[in-house]
Length: 188
Length: 160
Image (cartoon, rainbow over all chains, first blue to last red; front, side, top):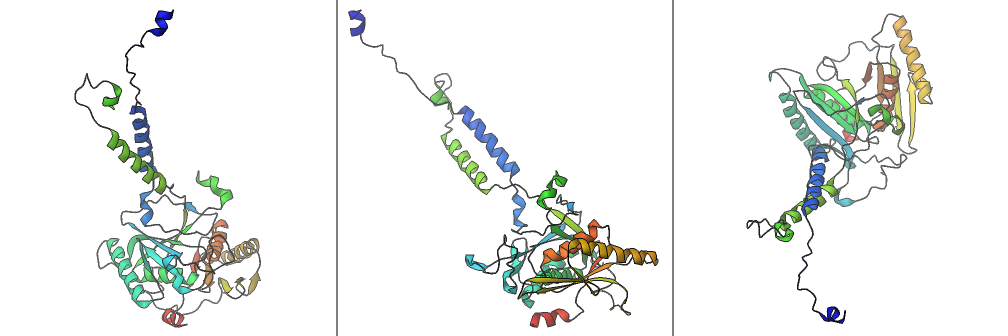
């Protein structure tokens, strides 16, 4: 017994290492999930509080072969300023400052009240409209336009956009709306 | 991986996975932070007229008998006034019933294509216009027109 207790412990180095293989596997799976699940088409869609309507069709984002242009009408202020008259959650606070309401297409903002910016917007819509025409001499285009306007946006801004679409020969207009929370089951 | 797993003696060629793990970690964090699910949105289809408005001539004879929803928004009080022709409207239910009743009358007079014309002030919030369109859709009144200012009126409105 005494001999045993005095004996030197065996000279064995125990190698303790973490097996990284399962972690790498799981991380790869997570990466794939986030890459495939994330919506990278956000550049077309601005943060907009859509008006609620119960009798709407689900927008699957499918466009005809002539393509679809998404126009956002939203409240925006430069340099992180806060507008006292606008709160997305408060239905009573409605801002009517024309400079705060922007028309956004593919990440660019336009103010429809400014004639120069309106001309730019018209030019852009004209180009899109021409893409949807069978021949450039056609008066009307089959191009689809989706107007995603904030519920509190002035109707005049939407009218302006519709008028520009009509001038450019675009007549197929869709207006974005959200399903009221209680009716969400309709979409599932 | 192989270096730590103790199999490096068996396999002299081993991969250093640490940089790969770092990069995947970074990518994972990036996607996790920027991730948000695609929102479910709906839409209402509305075709602009091809043969009137900016392309055609002004309507020669104004139609005196029509179903027109007038909407006016008072920016000082934030109150919305809605009328169907001359009749003041309170609730959405009331509006739906009156619109349906008037359109039915036109149908009985052999004018089934009579539209509901939404004539709203430019300051009216868009959600209230959508509400009227929604009422029409829910009552199967498919012909809804949005009244637009007369040509040249945009410029006048911009100057105000």
